[in-house]
Image (cartoon, rainbow, N blue to C red; front, side, top):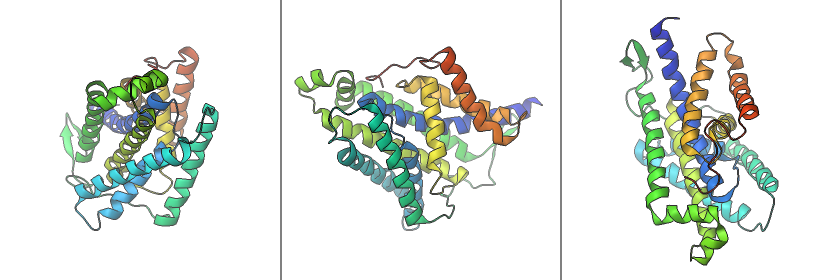
Length: 293
């Protein structure tokens, strides 16, 4: 393999890994605020992309994406209000089962609304034949959008949790809900906000990858699995670790294609996860636990 080919594979892996990272961050937002692992996160990405495709037929692309992300965020709030908030002193297992059931329900609703057709948003800049040369390798302009959005999400959430009153209140609730409530924080509202942020993050990820990966009613589940793998590998609750783990998974998967059939790339990522969990159960970078951004 030449150096140019290796770079081409690495760039492809970084792009795929960035997608996994954004989905993993969505998992961590909900987990940090509530301790819940929301397995419907992949469906939020799918719904965001599907709605943006529908809206793009009637409005400019930026407005369609904003509308889709906003509606998905509202859906996230609705999920928390209807399915989570009324539960008192329930087990984590019960909450996980609820989110798995929600994932199936959203997928079937999407099938009913949008059928089985494969859809895609237009490229944000250029088209499918456009490419940028990087040290002999070629990348699509959409790759730069994926990387840019990933970086913006990480920086934005870091600033939000560290420098805003709402972000600090969410962290306080996740660390000690009783103490935060005694200090005047509305814990229930903070949980709702966490679901909204998580859903919006997933929807934005779905929109930015849609031009390259295409969008279908059942594309959310594979994203959720890879995002969850990145979240666990990076240390559940550690969003910075999730980004690094997502990039690592993407690069390892892409490079594995050079020596194994492409059908084995999922086996490689899950195998890597199992290996790390046996050697280091807290993940590569250690979970920060609830309360960290």
